[in-house]
Length: 261
Ligand SMILES: NC(=O)c1ccc[n+]([C@@H]2O[C@H](COP(=O)([O-])OP(=O)(O)OC[C@H]3O[C@@H](n4cnc5c(N)ncnc54)[C@H](O)[C@@H]3O)[C@@H](O)[C@H]2O)c1
Image (cartoon, rainbow, N blue to C red; front, side, top):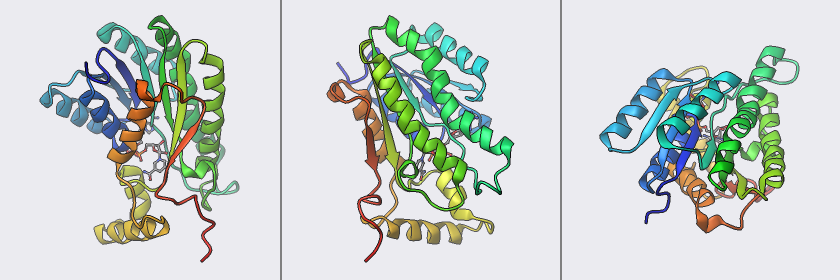
């Protein structure tokens, strides 16, 4: 029997780490319920899953809207019979300090990055309980531990994800639901590409920025989404049966040092 046979995984986000994770879990036999706000990315994901003959339902959802999350959970249950795994990867990455971030942007970051994890738990956990348990993995960031300048809202959400992970883990351990987070360093995905393009937007800037970001990591490179997906898959699997309430860094050693040579 393959790793995730008869398992149904709800994944927020349809690009980058979410897409790599969906592919990895599907390879292990899981049915995928993916949801994201980017219609073009959703269509591309659905098409690639059809081509690969994988079981997937991809829906356009704003994960910060309660009714939309409730509906995608219900659609997943209707199509595949339940929910066993939740991977929360959707996020936005606004730039700004406390004085340059407006209230709307601050609240948007909180509801998309953290509120969505509450919402998938609120609607998804009762379904997991019906199946006798499950696993949740939240994608946090190294910025939940040590942050850059000018990302006040984003960094705050990532610290909150660490705390929400622990809280969910304690509240649902007895129900057989394990909850963990992963904290990546720089990973080659659309969010990083946006950061790398900065204001100029040329391809040369992107490669140069990736080299620069990579050089800051002791392993000398940025990470790949498939590497994060592999860690997430482990945490979702029965091999991680004694892991709950913890964060797992996947950052090429970035947060191991104090950055002074
Ligand atoms: N790439 C990195 O360097 C890096 C580093 C640390 C943490 N992370 C985290 O990894 C996670 C995945 O990001 P990624 O790197 O794959 O980038 P990404 O931009 O490919 O993924 C973010 C996804 O969130 C979706 N999304 C944004 N707002 C949404 C909304 N309101 N409703 C539904 N979907 C929405 C986007 O459509 C996209 O699919 C994020 O939580 C991010 O903070 C990324």
